[in-house]
Length: 419
Image (cartoon, rainbow, N blue to C red; front, side, top):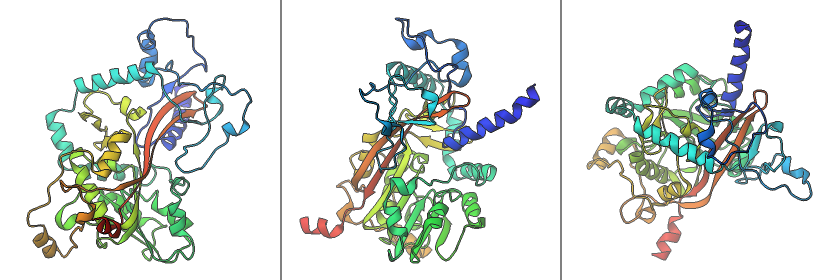
């Protein structure tokens, strides 16, 4: 009997990995689609050990449901693809949670918030040791190399949804769009770059796919989809300084679009300012940053156990890779320059070092810098995607939170005129 269950377990795990980024088993198990509400005590206090031990998040914690409309709107359950609308499948009173694979705009209630805060408190009480904190921060590339060495190109699903959420990707890839340069930061195994290339009809498009991990770059270069005529894969640390502040092969102000999908969260908070400064430098005036990453309260944050907490909202995973969970206002302030964070200082002899290495110097002009020297972007759009993913076969619920944004480098000529 036990041998028969193993193939089924493997299939279920594969289903979960396809639906989640960087996390497996971070789910809740609901043996029934309804629960009893006949108790006046806080929901968290009445949970059984078996529920908590199952996957860490109690199955009895339920999502907030919207009131049912007087007239049933058949379009409520249709899949929508409007940018930054994050779907239109709203969970209403009386709906069967397990009728669909996902529900959009799902909020959690006070009981879930109470449980989350309890988890955060436990995480803080048992942080990463000083020894391990130094070990994980000293050489982050080492852990990403190990990650891609183990998972190769099979861990992430291809991100076909990108052109739906970011229409500019359709514009730069259509026939006759002219010379366009797209930079992907944190390209991984090419799960974003390769789908874009498959849809590309623009003969003048050039894609630079950069990643922190040498192993990830090797995976991309060995792919059957890798075409050196239109794509270049390189190792690059987005928070690099001096001669490493810009990606290989790119000049200041040479990129039209920058893709940053689940990469900014891998940086330590003291690297944010330098990373934003480098992106500002490589973009053309008016160029855009397409951004998506983990949001505060995502299930993967709540699921962290002992010795994973590095600092507030910043964790190390079991594989040694790091992850930060952002708040919407915090993220906006980071990119517009309103958040005071320690940054990595540029070497005093930056110009000399750059010239020696034969690399272009980062050129974040004064028009786009705050008074304190930090970079500043305009926010075109920013939103929170709250979604409940569902494994219908096993009756599993996964509460996910992602942040999505479009940032734009200000046009220097306008700033100069105003000055």
